[in-house]
Structures are given as C-alpha cells and as structure tokens.
Length: 179
Image (cartoon, rainbow, N blue to C red; front, side, top):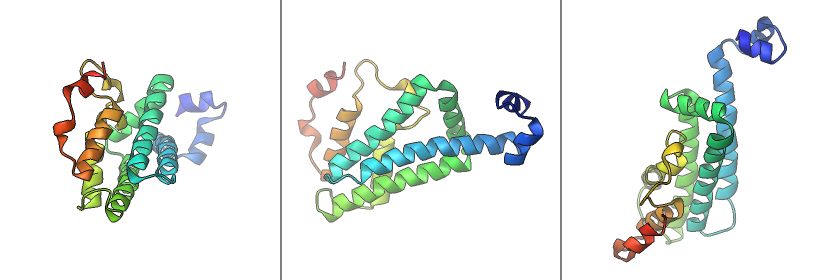
C-alpha cells in the first residue's frame, strides 16, 4: 500500500480511506478490467446480426481485449490472470456474465431454429471451453502455434456443431491453413 500511495502522490492513510486493504484495491482494479471486457462482449452480442455472427463477434471481442492487454498492459493482464487462477469473486462474476451473454445468443439461435435444441447454458459453456485458448486470459499466451486452428476455424467448427452439421466436411486443409 505504501508503494501505491507513493505512486499516487498521497499518504498510505489516504489510500486506506478508499480501500480497506491491498486485496480490496486489487478487486476494484480487476473488476474494472473485467467490466471493460463485458462491455465489449455485450456490445458485440447485441448487434443486428444472426446468432452465429453475434457469437463470432462476441468471442472475437473478448479475445481481442485480453490479447491487447497481454501485449500492451502486462501488469494488468497478470492481475486478471491471478484473479481467475485464485478464483476471486470478481472473476467468478465475470465468468458468469460472459456465460450469460453467450447463453442468450445460443438461446436465440435455438428459438430461431438456427441451432439445434438443447440447454443454452450448457451449450454456451461448451462453446466457451472450446474457445478457451483464445478467450481465457490465463491461456492467451499459448494461442497460435504450428498446426493449431485459429479462432475463426474454431468458431466454424463450434457453430457447425450448434447447427448439427456433420464435421465430415471440415478438412485437414482448413486446419493447415492456420500455419
């Protein structure tokens, strides 16, 4: 807290007027960082497009913000990673909100008969697990690589699964195009 106070040009006592502890300050910062991602995901999720296009846009927005933070704001990215790894309340709330956004889109796709029926919450969670290497801040550093599909290819696969498409048409050439 003394280091933070010094950086803010204030006394530690003054910092404690706003935050009861270092953890409270970390929670507040993490909450703000997660709120940025939620705002971007929400904006992408409500555009007037098909549910499939909205899913793509939403997950791309999440991936882009986490990747930008990983590349350009390392300390803030690390705080987000720690909060997820240590299961802080703010990270659990973030995860629940993202799951809800994705589930709402899936639910609409089911209602419009663009996706197969099923539990939209479970399907949304499956989609998030499938795209975790792109959307989970803990895994952003591992994305890409030799013979690894990119987010667009994963989304083609996942949306095909939601539609009930056969994966037989998903060729190795599509996978190798990611190199």
